[in-house]
Structure formats: structure tokens, C-alpha cells
Length: 157
Image (cartoon, rainbow, N blue to C red; front, side):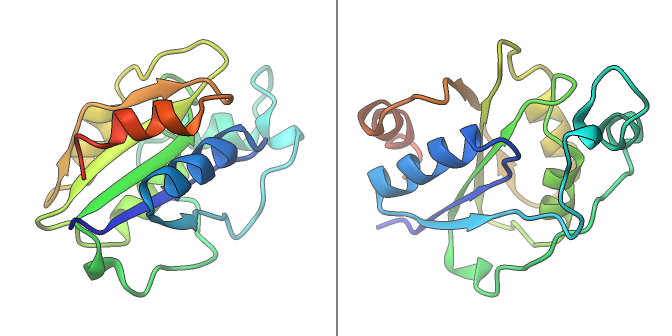
């Protein structure tokens, strides 16, 4: 059987809730992508020159991650969840993707959003992951249930 990991980045808790339900539904391990410097409400103010806006304008930006996964080689499928920022994955997700070899692995993005779709997410993630395969992802409501998540994920595991 395929061993899966659900890695996620969440600020407000919506993506965390979906990630936890997904991991439970498919029996996957779970890992939170935590920034060294946590995001504050001011960091997320889309109307100002906030930290998140500065990071998202710079494609090379890689915010530091607080912890690493020591056993990444154990997984053949990695589900990566995040909120959509500027129609793509937050820069800290790119930090996570840069930190590991994904050779022979399938990366499955999923997101939460107040209304935006995934935009250029898959294309951006594939440009960061040179040695793995990024599949087409899916946007979920933060209330997505385990059955919905399991039915979606079963084609990858």
C-alpha cells in the first residue's frame, strides 16, 4: 500500500481542519508547515505593504520553516494543503518544496479559499519541484467532510 503524508500550512485554521480530516480519512501521517516567524494579522493585510504581500511579489522568497520531516523518503504520495494567496500557493509552501527531494513521489496540492480558485498553483509548484510530479489540485471548503476528501484522495493512493 502507498504511504501518504498530508503536509499543510494554515494561518486561520481552515486549511488545518481540512488537512486533519484528510489525514484521518486516508490513514496518512500529518505534518504542519510552521514558519519560524509566525504570521500576524498585520502580516496578512492585503491592503498594505504587509509581509505576505512582499513575499508573494518575490517569486524567489522562501520564508524559513521551523521544523523538518526526517523521514520524507518513506512517502510516495505527499498531499500539500494551504490557503490560496494571490491565486497560488504561499511562498512558505515553496520553501517546503525546496527542502526535500521528491524523486519518484506524487505531490497532490489542495487548498482552501474564500472564493479564489487554484490559479497557477500547479504550474508554480511544478517549477519548484524539479524531480517529482505535481498533479492537478483541488479547492475545498473548510467544512469539507471526510467522505468527500477520501473519495477525492483515493485515486492518488
